[in-house]
Length: 326
Image (cartoon, rainbow, N blue to C red):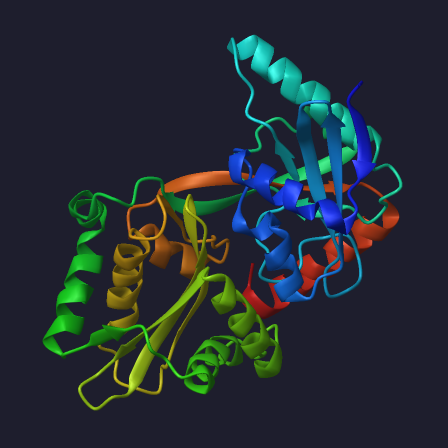
């Protein structure tokens, strides 16, 4: 059978989830149970041959109802089967699969996704008139050697960790949901807004992902039992992703968040091979995450160039510039 593009029926989603596990571009964000936990409408398009799925993508809708990454789904875009053989042969196969997928989604006018860092060749999109923007995250690609990780962090990070330890800051993995959400939400309140999801939705997502065993929450508290900072990760066997981070600035600054993030990396190393800070492109946040010694890692945001997407992106960038000074 010639490889053909088709939209998977839900009864075959288990085939997609298995494919996600072997694709270099696969991540927990592309798993169907994860998307269902977010409550995001989605379709799955695949290139299918006699030997199974060769490539594909999740066409999820975000909270605005357009084809774009939903909140808390960092990386989507195209996933490809691992290619074998010489380099020239591998990139030829990947190009052909990507071209076939792109040609079959021309109907998706609002296409605007951030892709996994392992997706490298966006030329087939370029040739079809799409546009892209390079974004950056920090990744620790081997989180198993904690001694090496600690040796790579900036001196200011080590200094801040010692300060937290002097003040008796302790990291725990039992954080009441209401306290966690309040601290996380306070990060957005300081910027004049609020968390992108309600407490009810947060709790619903937390409960569903805990049932799947792919989410962990941590908190840093002092000797009085007060929580100074919180983190939350989602993970598969390959990578943990720092999905949530917040700190209570009404409490004394014991550098609890620095200590907490490093301890989160340490505990995540028992769950996955790598650790992804999920950005950030915000200047102040980038400086903080850079201090932990991760590798600066580019990834693509690819969108279909049309009036709708151009106006949408202009509006978002204007909002961020006014709100965050970006």
